[in-house]
Length: 445
Ligand code: F0G
Image (cartoon, rainbow, N blue to C red; front, side, top):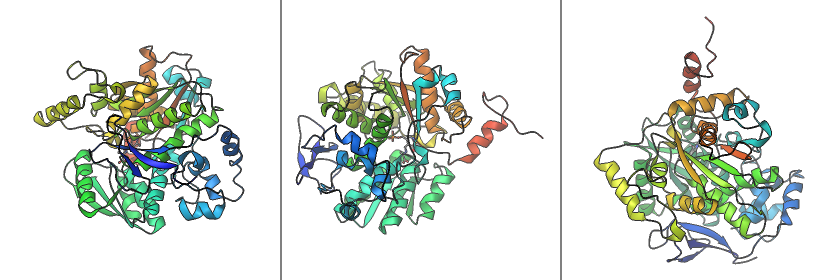
């Protein structure tokens, strides 16, 4: 098992490689990195993963991330003893991914126009810090531990910082979080304080906070746990594993995510590329990414709305000049991302290239929805007794939109990922107090 895992630049013409202990997030030429494995895991592991759902006293079997440890074995653990797992793997008592699996939701199915059986929604808000981030953070902090790191750093629209701070507190390491002042939901900000992180408020938006945090990390040799960290992507692959396992490893037609920094799109793509290559799945689901129309860089560039050129991975030769030109245009016109769904209020998605690769591999699509549509999406999920935040509300609404465009067919099997739970309670209260809203149940006076 030794020396199975390593890091490799995503640019096929560069391909620089690094040892797995490296704390780089980019190669020397500033391209993102992938975690790579030399040995293909055998599909016979499916049975073992299923058996671990009866955890037999191991928190690493309870964990919906580490239950799949052989598929993200960058620590190169070569025994399955509880002691070895406990020495290497970081887990919040097995809670990450433990509660998340796909559900049918009848009212959402009616809303989007699919039969109940064909629509699955996976609430990642039931993770210990309340969002999908815990999947990736458990893995990133595991790598930080491998590299003997004592302080982690991130920028955040709120959920990343909540998750990072929670794991840091649990591992007794420090955590600095850079946040766009006044632009994150109160429930998320209070988590970072509560878990003892050092908050650094940045005047500006998430993109500004991310560049400030990356600069600081470079300066002090800090360890970044944003989704540019390739180990975050490894952990987030397990979101797809859980969905597929529930579907008995029969791939659905679609997997749908909100699009922010595009870590999820990247991790979904990487998991599908690997599973297909390893012979674990026979069919490749298509990824659909849903942007907010107020923070729609991917939709704009992918669908040729900037200068008619459709930005593509192009087998590893994407038109990066087009991306740069678009960012210069945003700066010149002073266009800032703007949406009430602050989780995805991002104009410069740091994983855009990995996301393009994922979209190419899966023949994916990108669309955008309005704030009102996200609020309706969030609310119809609520009426099924499930909690989700506004950014996650883009998923039901995005599915509905793609069905109305006949891109998703009404007999397709669709899995939507509800990325986080409600941490801005004022949004739901405002929504229901306005009788004009489609699903409002106003209070009686
Ligand atoms: N949904 C929620 C609830 C999020 O918090 C985020 C991102 C996304 C979707 C977008 O996911 O970046 O993988 O495309 N939140 C980050 C944060 C940026 O700092 O918490 P993505």
